[in-house]
Image 1: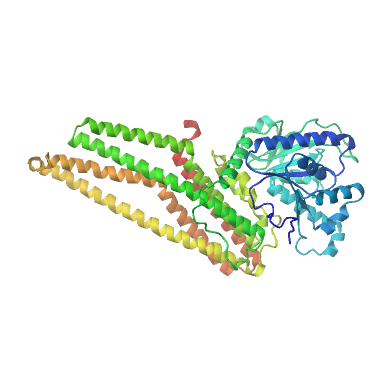
Image 2: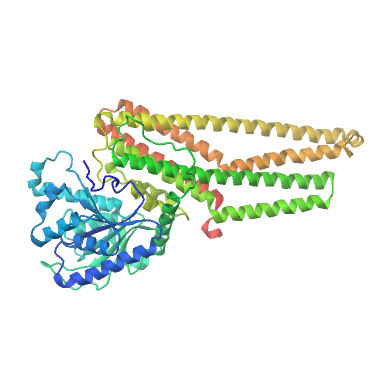
Length: 580
C-alpha cells in the first residue's frame, strides 16, 4: 500500500502539478557542494518564474547527497517537496547512517514534505530486502517513476556514464530516451536545435568524492532529447518550443481550476464494484471528468459559431438573391454588408479565442486519460507509453496542443501494480471500457449514417427540382412571364428558388464540413471495428498476459484514431505553414 503523510493528499501523479524530479550522486565532492546549491537555487527559481499558475513540486528520493540537498533548497524557496522513497521506510532507513541519517529523519519529520513510499515489487518480501539485487530493483522503480512523471529532471551529475542500473547516469539516459531501452546518441546542437523537443534535463555538474574525474563545466546547462528520443543535444538555455509547451501546461492548470464547463454533467470512468478503489483510479477519474467538461464547453461554443457562420452565409446569399432577382434595393445591400461584417468579426473572435483548437486539445487529453485509466486498472500499463503515440502522430506539434506532452504525465502512477484484483481485471476492462465504448461508437455511427443519408436525399431532391425548373424555363417561359405572384412574374420567382435551393445545400455542406461529419463517421466506424475485435479477443484470451497484449494494442489504435482525427480537424481550420 502506498503511504502518504497527509491523508487528504492524493498520490503524486493524479493531479496537475509541474514536477521537477531530482537525481544525483550521494557523494558530491565537498568543494562542489556550495556551487551545486547555488546552481540548484538558480534553476528552481527560473522554473518558479516561468510557471505562474501551477504548483511546482520537487520530487526526490531523499537519498544522501543530491536528493537531500535539493529538498533543502526547495524548502528554502518555498516550493512543494514530495519524498518518493524507493521502498518502505522501515527498509530504506538501513541505507543511512551517521549525519546522513539525522538529516534524512529531520526531513521526513518536516510537515512541508509529503512522503510517498514505493511498495515492494510484486513477489518480494521483507526478507528479500537484505539482498542487494532486491534493493537495486526498488531503486530502478524510483528511477522509472521520475522518468515518467518529471516535467523537468534535474541531474546533479559528473557526466560519466557509470553503467550502473538505477544509478544517476542510468536515470539520465532513461529519461532522455523516455525508457525506450536504448541509450540516445549525443549530437551537435546546431544539427537538431530546430527540432520538436522530447524530454529536457537540467544538468548541474558535480564531481564525486571517490572519483573526482577531470574538469567539469562551471555552469548548469540543459540536455534535450528529440521527439523520437533517439538522440539528444546540449544547450545553455531552454528551447523556445519547451517554453511554449510549459506555458500551455500552465494555462491548462488555470483552465482546469476555472468555471469553464463546471456546470456540465460529469460522466466518470469508474463505477462501484469495478475495482477502481485506489487513489490513482479516483484521481484519474476526476481529471477525466474535468477535461471532458472543458472539451464539451469549447465544443458547444465552437459549434454555435459554426452554426452562426452558416446562418450568416445563408442570410447573405438570400439577401443577394432577392436583390438580384426580385428587389434591387440599397437596403438589401446594406444588410449584405452588415452580415459580412458580422461574419468577419465573429471569425476574428473565434480565431482569438482558439475555441476549436482548445476543444480538440482537451478532447485528445480526455481520451488519453480514459485509455490510461483502463491500462492502469487492467495492469497492462507498465509497458505502455502514451507519449510514444503522441510523438508518432505529431499532434503535439500544433499550436495550442504542445502542452499535451507534459499534461499526460499526470496520469503516471507511482507504480503500475496493485490497482485492481487480477482475477477481475479483464472483466472490468471489457465491461467498463470496451463494451461501453463499443456501444457509444455504434450508436454515433448509426446516427451520423442517418444524417448522411438524409442529406443525400435532400441533395437528390434539389437536383431533380433544379432540372424541373430548367425544363420549365425552356418550355414554359412565356407562360411563366404572364403569371404574377405578389407583383413579380413566375419566371422571376422560379429563378429565385432555383438559386435559393443550391444555396441551402451549399450552406449545409459548409456546416457539415465545419463539423467534420465525414471524419467523425470514419472515426466511429474504425473505432467500432477496433473495439469489436478487442471484445472478441478478450473473450478468447487464454491468460492475463494475452489479455494485456490485446488491451495495449487497443490503446494504440484508440489513441492513434483520436489523435489523427484531431490532426484532420485542425487542418480544416488552419493554413499549412508554407501558406501562412
